[in-house]
Image (cartoon, rainbow, N blue to C red; front, side, top):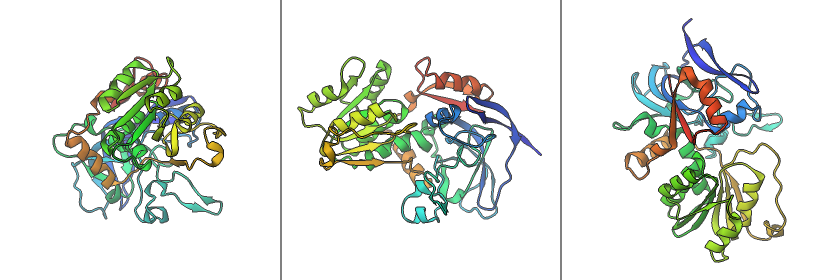
Length: 357
């Protein structure tokens, strides 16, 4: 049986490069030869044991590649075609998909609905940090890459760009809105860009790393706040003349940023949460206005599916957004353990790494 290299979760603290069989292709599947992928913050949660997956799973959920083999029932694609697939791979025919909640395309059980079921790569099935990945329900999930776009130009579409944009979309950012984005990692930077494209006219980016705040301005931020130099809540209330923001986007996943988002909302404002939380959250009485502030709190899991990917690549193709500055480091798949070490410890100004087999 033919083998491939893959980054495999062994146990908390250990993701190693090893060999696995190249997957067999079912009727609705497509086998993709990976040309570029990357490491996500969620993969670091897996590495640290903060998010449980089974031992032996291939990690990663951001594939860019070439169709190697198509399932017998797959139509509309051809082998050799350049494609991406979203981090979320809905089937298109589940109850969740038919209700419009494509990201929650999980299986119902006797104990209730399984959350984040649409996230399969590197969660419930083998993922993209390998030489090949098997894409389920290929006709719902494969999106051809437009001619003229490089792998790195579309590398953020499967997850980071889709997730970041959804912070503004779920928060229903409108023309003329004031928006605060807490944390300017890759997702936060895309949330800043998404708010700009959605029509926000005052965008406030919060972080502590000068380079990230500089990139945030490039992505559309009108004001930047370094939370190590000033209290971000006080700074935002001063910038808004005490009004507060229409939408606060939480893009880190901590109690502190969640509470700060809630604290800067205007009455009736929306907290749009994108963070992956590793412990219980508490809602502070004052910031929550004792439950009487008409606030809205909404969470979003990265939207997936081929139409979502097509739309995101059209944004890149139209040159309305340049995400190349987010790729700061490049590694071969053979060196992925070193890439994990760099990314997990956030050294050398890393934002995103490109991994090429």
